[in-house]
Amino acid sequence: MDMAARVMARVQNQLLYHCFSGWRDTSAHKIAIKKLLLQVSLRRMLGCFAAWHQYSHKVAGAAKLVRRLLASTQEGAFREWRAVAAEEAHWRRVGFMLTTTLHLENTK
View 1 (cartoon, rainbow, N blue to C red):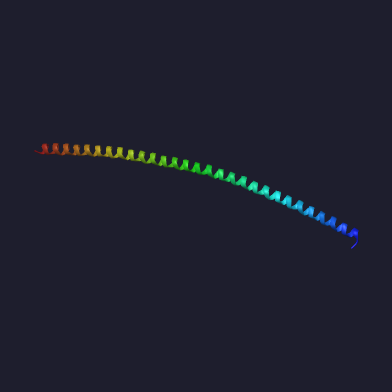
View 2 (spheres, one colour; view 1 turned 120 degrees about the vertical axis):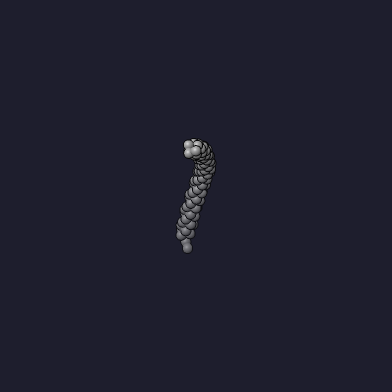
């Protein structure tokens, strides 16, 4: 090989090495950027999940409170209805006793 061919081969080898180094650095930079973006999006997703988790616990607590309020309201309404029904039954019995007593006295 003559001297010019060796010089050209060396220059070509250096150019190829620099091209490969540039490609490697660019791809490493792209990978680093992708990893950074993935970490940022993961942090955002975790933040959103944490917010949703807190919200769902608040909503579940509110739903539980509403269920308790409704249950106590229904229980109170049922107790009132039972008291009114018991009072009506008492007065029905009293009225029945009065009518039978009066009826018995009238028949004597």
